[in-house]
Image (tube, rainbow, N blue to C red; front, side):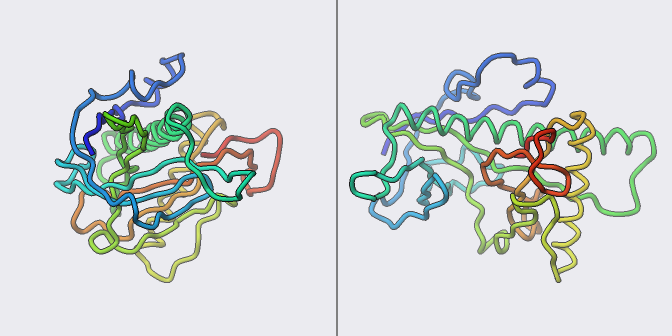
Length: 250
């Protein structure tokens, strides 16, 4: 299927704050490109809370740091009141809902940027620490629109468990406390992500931090541990209990 791909442009937290206008996944992309999206539309999809996912690949690597062209293909769905079946939204609604998802990934990536800016500043002043600092980033993504049918998808670089290790949830969306791990490396990464949350919370003056960290379990073949996060908005207190005077978690 030939489609137009709108890769999400990299940005910074200060850049997002300075951009006082709604996000447009098409107009604000990192340059559109035309290529082939190859997948089996009859394959059984995986369903999440509001998105379904299929797996395929692009005719050439575009949205990944590696040479892989494999992608996760997502669309938003709803339950039909008449039949009780799960249906995908129309194309215009897909653009709206998937753009919101992409925008959340932009903010999450920018919030991680705050952390590494903080770390690099202290390394410049104090020198390298006597312990390793995990390098972690979120999956890269793009909006894709089929040239003929105008069917709309969000594409994410694929976390391949066969290469990048088992998919791990480090911190859930019901609490800011990390999961417990028997594996020392996973526990170390979870502890680092807790540190990231603290930096984000302090640097945004208590306005935002990232919740629901999940991603690969090893990084031996890649310079970064690649992360995803579950999409949700919820007011939380620091201990995870509902509170009207709290921050917003992504």
